[in-house]
Length: 248
Image (cartoon, rainbow, N blue to C red):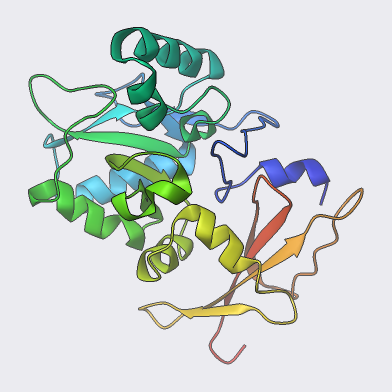
């Protein structure tokens, strides 16, 4: 793998310490025809729509903010500073180049109301919103910023902000009650010689492990005929996910 590909994939850690490095253009598509200007990376957008359809959200949940260019993030940050002040902005708006929204993998959702706060949309722990929150990990999304992890993420509690990391990572993160920051460190304990195993509810065996970035390029060995996914972590290496038969 070319080392610049640590900046590509669904498991990128983007926060105050790790800026987003745009390497090659990712395909962004509209969430749906009702919101043509709110976009996500193609797979994330399709899966988001699948979840909303599965829980029968219809028009009860609306997308508020998806993919943002660095310019858009800069404008939002400056506008929030002027309107809300520095303390509020540091809590709820990431610095340009440090926002998950710039990856096209993050979405802010809101309960459909006449007036929706763009920075802090209402997304309660009840009703259809909580149905979405509970279903999301089964399809690859996590609630990114929880109250319990504020000191780790550096972002205040955001019930409305969801991040696509892919399955089974979303389910593991939720089951182990980890932040994405903690999950990145957790996976580093597992290597090609000692993989993390996860059995899905359907009985499929999945294996996950970390490969540190090499000096110039990184060699990653994949079993023959394996179904796999490789994601950079936006820091120092790659996370490999293998799908296997239980006797494989």
